[in-house]
Length: 147
Image (cartoon, rainbow, N blue to C red; front, side, top):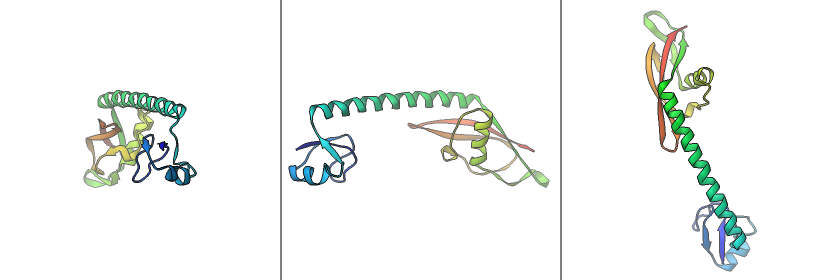
């Protein structure tokens, strides 16, 4: 019996795949647990339309990530921090603070998990790498100044 998987099934395939399984396995396990639907012409057409919509959505998200990468390359963010004698910071400037500064100053919502940097422990200018998805990354200039 041919079925279209609704979720990943170990040993059978990934979500959206058309697979051929035994009749009993389909009737007694896959269909009752809503892991698959019967491969009728209507269901196959629906899956094709969903796949096309997913590809278009991914292409649009990729274009957005490329545009954001270019905008970040041209931008810089100022982060203020308190320091003691000798220019050493109290603590460090972390990706969480940089993410908050990006949202406040530039209006882009980039989660702290997407920022690749070590904690900054001194004043100065740094470059922070931002992973934007779809193997696209951008760099952002971060200036750490005294509060």
